[in-house]
Length: 84
Image (cartoon, rainbow, N blue to C red; front, side, top):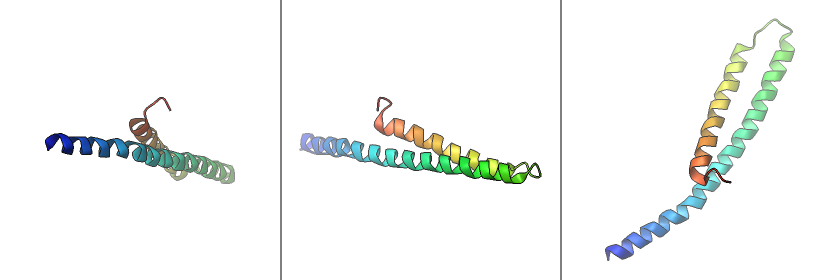
């Protein structure tokens, strides 16, 4: 009986891997788009500032987005492996 339960649990966890990898890849792709948008926003703010604003708040937003991107990269590596 324990062998059957163990086999079922192993099969269930093996199936969870690809779904977790897909979710991590989706999140990573979302964060790539978010980084791209944050860079464009920051560039617009810097250009529009005309040296009257250091755009510090906007830079902090870019940094926060980058931290989320780092997490997404780490999660994708953990869920999918580094070889992909």
